[in-house]
Image 1 (cartoon, rainbow, N blue to C red):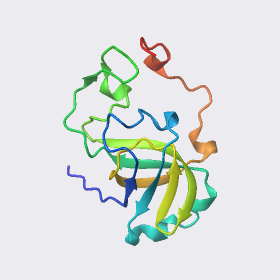
Image 2 (cartoon, rainbow, N blue to C red; image 1 turned 120 degrees about the vertical axis):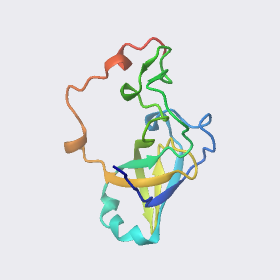
Image 3 (tube, rainbow, N blue to C red; image 1 turned 90 degrees about the vertical axis):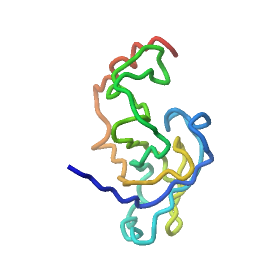
Image 4 (cartoon, rainbow, N blue to C red; image 1 turned 30 degrees about the horizontal axis):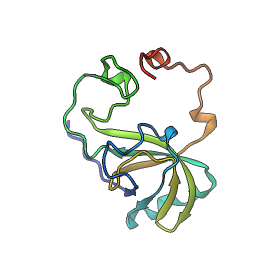
Length: 147
């Protein structure tokens, strides 16, 4: 099966390399923009009322993957799918960011952890009734060996 995805925009970020980017959006106060390509502008209608959005994007600097990786916040090898490591068979990232403003084709965002030039695959509104989970657990992360 072949899958083809078309970017809907691009992220403008202060981070040029993986080494300078935060490891998660929740650990960032960085500001940037999502530039939406003109053919997708109508899809932004009604987005302004949401405080946060979910961005799906391509880890465009990822090269290869391993099924066992050492997460950024641990010193043990873990199964890739039990981590958020960027080197994946399908290098798709997800971040929840604060939507500060919409200015035409630009979305001003805060709390970003993506690299400059990152292709955006999709945007979804963050809806607390749908996205918060009571009683959620965090597996190995709760008892990780490195802080």
